[in-house]
Amino acid sequence: MDACCFFTAFRSPNGGSSMILELGRLGRLSVVTSVLVVQEACKNIKNKVGQEPVTKFHRAIRAGIIEIVPTPDAAAIARWENLTHAKDCHVLAGAAAANVDCLITLDRKHLLTAKVKDHFPFPVKTPADFLDAFLPGS
Image (cartoon, rainbow, N blue to C red; front, top):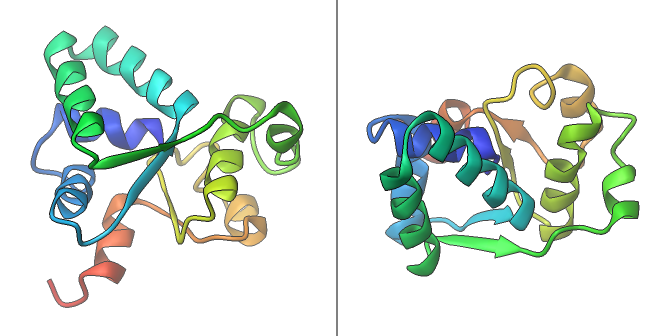
């Protein structure tokens, strides 16, 4: 998951991002992210929502609901510069390094683009699109 999904999950407990975290808590799927994404999410949550949701985010991490992979190295990050804005290459690099089944994001400007979807080796979906595929008929 990307930082925007964590921001949304801890701001709105009833949306798709929150539901994905709940499925992770229930052991129905693995929620994976990188150190840089966690740092970005914490900063955004704290600045725009407050400290309490950041504390809940840290609790979810400590509880094992969210798996954190190491920050990809500069070469791994640079590999994706032809697909997206430089500030978001670390998201693609982290997902690729973790060998995820799907990258979940709400970033329509930089990650949910035709270019990324066509050339990234894993599906890139919104939380809603992911849930529609993961929980068909719900």
